Image (tube, rainbow, N blue to C red; front, side):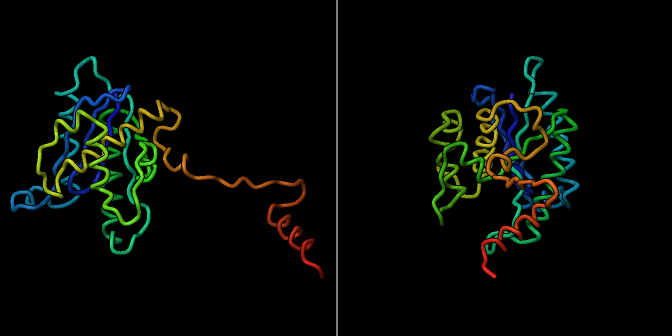
Length: 225
């Protein structure tokens, strides 16, 4: 089975999916500090990491039965660049810390190296196009609600815009990437999403001439003296 995680410092969307794309279970881990009690409970990222570790331990020991084994873990990678009016440097740092901390915990608990997916790759592989200027979270939510019956039947009506089901929807698409891409033990622990979307330029080597010198020589031949 596939475990898909949408990690943030507030709500973590969790999807357990069979290898054929059937959703087995949907859940979330609530780390929000909106009340006095929750602020006392989660004073820093260490508290949140410990709570999540206990949650996954309980999930492994009490939910999964002897016939259910997680073979793949897929995680959406943290934002890798600063976006004005959307993210701050502090937010990015917190996301990176949280992503790494929970990646370590699921690896420790389940013994599987996570596979990371770029957010754009997650949507592209699932056939979702986001027009420029659109509400990405809402479009993902609506897309998943339309495509996945299990999700549609679970989601309550009249949800507020900020709710855990939005994060669960993200985790469904992340898990589904594992179904589409298939098992890839050799790539475990790497960013497959980046590998699928990045075209690497392979330098042409010429005996006795480094690539930079070849480029300079070619330019000199084109330009008359």
